[in-house]
Structures are given as structure tokens and as C-alpha cells.
Amino acid sequence: MAYEVNISLPAMGEGITEAKIIRWLVNVGDVIEEDQPLVEIATDKVDSEVPSTTSGKVKELLFKEGDFPQVGQTICVITAEGKVSGTTEQSNTVTQTNTITQSISTLNIENSASNSSEIEVKDSSKLLNMHLSPLVRKIAQEENISTPELQKIRGTGLNNRITKDDVLLFIQNRDKVVAKAFNPTVATKQSTEISTISEGMRHEVIPMDRMRKLIAEHMVNSIHTSAHVTSFIEVDVTKLVNWRNSIKENFQQTEGEKLTLTHLFAQATVNSIKKFPVLNSSVDGDNIIIKKNINLGIATALPNGNLIVPVIKNAEKLNLSGIASSTNDLAKRARENKLKPDEIQSGTFTISNLGSFDTLTGTPIINQPQVAILAIGAVKKRPVVIETPEGDTIGIRQMCIISLSYDHRVIDGALAGLFLKEFRDTIENFSPSA
Image 1 (cartoon, helix red, strand yellow):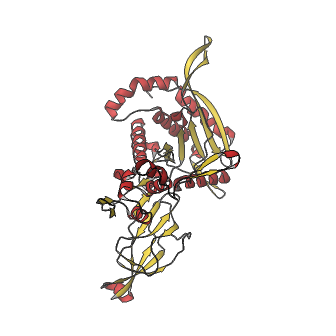
Image 2 (cartoon, helix red, strand yellow):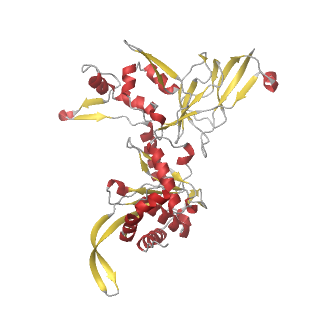
Image 3 (cartoon, helix red, strand yellow):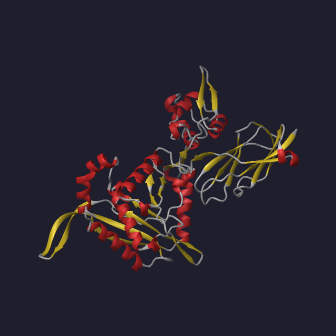
């Protein structure tokens, strides 16, 4: 008995209400198997495949590529064969809840399913089984990527699995890989384009990956949304640096975590936000929404050069050990592509440690819908004037420039200055007992 199965757009995380149809992987009339990927979808956080919940034939695709269906809407109808029970048999229509194989290529993070499909790729000498996600398998088949070529691709996904971005990057640079590993005379159409322009100059065209495109879109949107202003303050972090250097080995032994200046700056940030909660807010029309929980985003650079912002939820409830533990765990899993979608969402304030790259200072762009972002410059030894009751002296101190970019619709220069001063005083008056 034939019946219809409605495939709906699944939920993909808090706050995500719609997704863009990137590419249909099937056509009307195709015979499909259960768990076969039907469509590739994307949000500003997640790239995903929606698999079929049943075997059957594709009857109807309800959205076109580029459309934005809402979560819960039916996007595809499958005609299946078999017995249907209960009320479903009476209506001859079945609506099933989708499961979703999430591959967060937006953030270059792939949570591969433990029972992911196998692909058999033949070459002239042997047959090799490789564990690949359905989307990667399809791309490999369409692009005729051989077993030796697949073996050359370095997987950046969970358990070193090959992700969609890994395959696309390989395709873009295929001529270079093939020339080095197989035949120096081989070149492919998918290679990075090198063009000759006027006066004999040459340039290399590197297509943005999806994550870079989304970062670019997010940054431009932020500039168009918020009236950006940046204020700066110089901080003497000598006491903090000396205390951290004296305690870090014991801290790691007792707490089981490495203690860095970022953790101390994060704790100082939380303490300052508690005194100036407007910085922990967002704008909704003509309303300012002050968030009671401080969900602190920590900007983290990924091995591929992209950026991700894991979020420490309820940071106001954590002590230094808790902040260190959460920060280290999130940063480690971010670089290993093991973050969950909800761990990069719902941030209320962000800090970025520019000092990791020896940068003195910068003017960071606000991470929407937040209203402020704090950037921490490199800590450098410099001769400075030290004011004492006995008179001024010159000494060598560990100095750092802190910058705060803020939304001038909500935060004025005076409030920003007070926040920075509170942050500076917290650092400069640091006491181990506190």
C-alpha cells in the first residue's frame, strides 16, 4: 500500500527558525533509500544534510534552491510502500520527525555520525572502503576523486574524518596536489585560477569557503546595524603577570587546568559587566534588552585561519577555576572541530585576545546582536612613569592596551570610559587574596 511521508525542516539549535536550501541532492521521480541525504541546507551557524526517513520515490520538492523554509515546514514529499498503522493509515499520509546529520562546515566543525555511510572507490590496483558522510561521498563520486587522491586529503572533522570543506579545498587545488603526488603534467579545471593581467602581473584567485563568506556577511551586517565607536585604555598588568607566573604550576596541579592571562582577563571582564550591566545587552527596535546571565564569548582562531566564538554560559556564576576549565575545554574542542551548535550561540558579550598574535591593539567589530566587544592587546615591557607618594619614578612595567568597541545607540563614551576604568582598576589592583 502506498502512502506519503512528509519530510520537514528539523530544528537546528536555539534561536534558529529558518534555513536556506543550498542544493537539492535528489530530483522528483528519484528512487531513494532510508537515510539517503535529500537536501543540503544552511543557516548562519550550521551546514546540514536532511536525510530521508524512509525508502521510496520522491514525489514533490516544495521549495526551490535559495528558498528559506521555516523549521517544521514540509520541504519534501516521499511516496513509500508498506503498511501504515493507526491514524496515519486512515489519512494515508505520514509526517515523521527528521533526524539530522549536522556538519558544521560554517564553523568548519563536523559531527560525523557513528554509523556514517561507506564509499567504495575503485582504482586500477585495488578496492578501498572509506568512511565518509553522505555529502562527502556524493561530491567524491561526482568529481571522480580516486582512492589515492582521497588518501591524500587531511580530514579535519571528528576523528579525522574528511569533511565537505576538506574535499572542496582539495578540488580547488587539485592540479597542485595531483602534480606533486601523481603526474606533473596533469592540471584540472577545479584548480585555483591564476590569471595574467596588464603589465605582466599575475594574481591568484582563491574562492571564499562558506565559513569565510558567512563571517564577511556577519561583519558587514554588524557595521550596518550598529553605530561603532572604539575607546582605548592602557593597563599595567605587572601584578597580574607576576602572580600568574608564580601560581601557574601549582594551579595546574591542583585544578588540572592551565592558567593563562586570558582567564584572568575574562574574570575581570565579568566583574566589570556586573557593575555596568548595560554592556551585557541587545537592541530590539526601540528597546534595550539587558541580559541577566553573562554568556561570555571567547574569540578563537581555527587551524584553517577562520574564526569561531565559543560561549561560556552563565560566566557570572563561575570562579577563576571554572572560567579556566570552560575556556580551555571550548578552545580545545573548537580546534578539534568537536563543538556542539549550542556552544557557539546565545553569547551576550565577547572578548578577543589580540595579544595571542603579538598585536598591540585593534578595533574589533561587534558580534551581533551584542552591543560591545573587548579586545586585549599584547602584554609588553615598557618604561613608564610610576606615581608614588614619595614622588614619580620610571620603571619597567608589563603594559597592555585594552580596546572596547561599542554600539553608540546604547552606550555613550562616558559609560564606555567608566567600564574600561573599572576593568583597568580591577587588573591593576589585583590581589591574590581577592
